[in-house]
Amino acid sequence: MDVEALAQDLVEALGREAVALDPSELERYSWDALGPNRALPPKLAEIQPQPLALVRPRSTKEVAAVVAVAQRHGVGVVPYGGGTGVMGAAIPVAPSVVVDTTGLDRILEISQQDLTVRVEAGVLLSRLEEELEESGLMLPHDPWSLPIATVGGAISTNGMGYRVGRYGSMGDLVLGLTVVLPDGRILQTRGVWGKSVGLNLNHLFIGTEGVFGIITEAVLKVAPAPEERVLTAYQFPGFVEGFEAIMDMTRIGLVPSVLDYGEDFLPSHEGTISQGAALYLAFEGFREEVAAQRSRADAICRAHKGRPLPQEEAWRFWRQRHDIALRFAKGRRRGRPQEPAPGARFDYIHVSLPPSRVLEFRELCQEVLARNRVRPLEFGIWGHPGLFDAVMIHPDGDSCALAQVIDQLLTAAQDMGGSMEQCHGVGLKLLHLMAREHGVGLEVMRAIKRALDPGGIMNPGKLAL
Ligand SMILES: Cc1cc2nc3c(=O)[nH]c(=O)nc-3n(C[C@H](O)[C@H](O)[C@H](O)COP(=O)(O)OP(=O)(O)OC[C@H]3O[C@@H](n4cnc5c(N)ncnc54)[C@H](O)[C@@H]3O)c2cc1C
Image 1 (cartoon, helix red, strand yellow):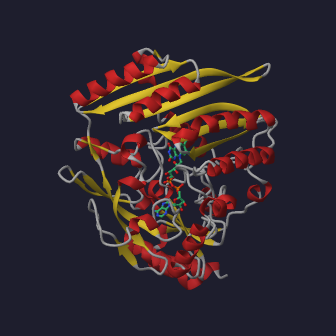
Image 2 (cartoon, rainbow, N blue to C red):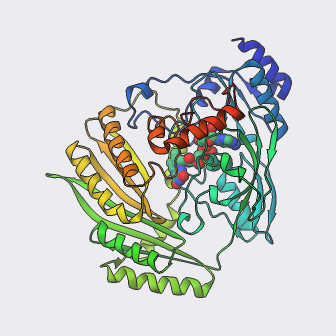
C-alpha cells in the first residue's frame, strides 16, 4: 500500500492543514473508550489499530472527497466523533483513513415552530443542548456523555440518555439525515414527521456504527423547554420493591421524564451485600401535568415501601449526572493506558428485556456472578422497566473469566426474548454474538452491505458484516 500517494491525494482533496500523519495524532484516534481494564478476551486484547491518516473535513463535499480517495486506494474509512463509544466501534482495525467529524460543527437551523433542529454531525451534544435552551427548547437525548459525544456518534450507536423512557433513544429523534455513501454519493432523507413512502432509510444509519456511510447532517426532533421541573428520590429496602413501583407507574401510563434506579452492593464476609436501591425521578412538562405525575408517583413509591429522600439528594443527582464524562475527558488528556492497571477487572452489561423477565434475570445475574466469584457493584433500571444494567468486577483481574461471565449473561438475555445491548452498540466487543442475536437478520444486513459497499471500505471489521 502506497501511504505517501494516499496522503498526497488526501492533501489535494482537503488541503494540507486538514490531513495529519503524525504518529502521536494517529495514536490518539486509534482508540475509543473501550479501555484495557474492561473484560477483553485475548483476541480482542491483541488488536493492533491501523490508522493510515487522519483527516478533518469541514463539509459534506469534503467528506465525499475523502471517501472517493479511499475508494481509489482501496483502504478503509472510519468515522470518528467524540471517540467515547465504549465497545471499540471507532477503532480502525484494518488499514484506514480516520475521519474526525468534529469539524462538521455547525448548528444550521433551530425551528421553534417545527420543534426541530438541523445540525452537522460533529456538533457536541452539550453545545447543541445549550443552543436549544437559548431558543426555549430542550434536547431530549441526555446521556451521561452529553459533554463529550457528538450528534453523529450518538445516532450511529443509537445511544440512550436519562430521558429515554419519555422520548426514546437518539435514533427515535432522527427525522432526516444527510449521508455520504461508500461510493461517494450523497443521500438525503426528508426531515419531517411521518412518512409512508417505502423504507425509512434513516434506519440504515441509526445504530449501525458507520458501516453504511458517514452521516454529515441530521434533522432531529426536539422538545419544548419544560415549564416546570420537579425532582424526587426514594430509597427502597430492596430491588424488588422499587421495581414493582416502576411497574405500577408503567401500568397506568405514568412515564417520568427521568427514571434512574440503582441497587448498590458492598463486599461482605459472605460475598456481597445489597445496600437497598435508590430511585431518582424527574417530572418535566407543563405545571398541571408535573403536579399530577409527582403526586401519583409519590403514592405508588410509598405503597412499595419507598422512603422519600431529601430534596437536596435529588438535586445532587441531577447536578452530578454528567460528572463521569468530565472525569473521563480529564483521564483521556493524560493518554490512553496501554496496559491494564493491576488488580480488579471491571465491566458492565446493558440488556433490553421484556419487563416481565427482569426480576428473573436479576436473580440469574446474582447466581452466575456468585458462582464465578465476580462481585456485583450495581444492578439498575433506566427510563423503562425493560432496560436493565449490571456493573461488576472480577477481584482477581481475570479478564477472560469476566468476559465468559458476561457472555453467559448476554446469551441468557437473548434466550429470555431480550436483546444483548440497549445503547452502546456492538463495536468489537459483541461481534461474536451477532449471529446469535440476529439469525437470518445478519444475512440480510450482510447482503445490504455487499450491495452498498462491495469493497467493504466503510468502517471495516464492524457489525460482523
Ligand atoms: C463516561 C461515558 C459515559 C457514557 N454514557 C453514555 C450514556 O449515558 N448513554 C449512551 O448511550 N452511551 C454512553 N456512553 C457511550 C458513548 O458516549 C456513546 O456511544 C456516544 O453516542 C458515542 O458518541 P461519539 O461521538 O463519541 O462516537 P464515537 O465513539 O466517535 O463513534 C461511535 C461509532 O459511531 C461511528 N460514527 C461516529 N460519527 C459518525 C458519523 N458522523 N457517521 C457515521 N458513523 C459515525 C464511529 O465510527 C463508531 O462506529 C458513554 C461513554 C462514556 C465514556
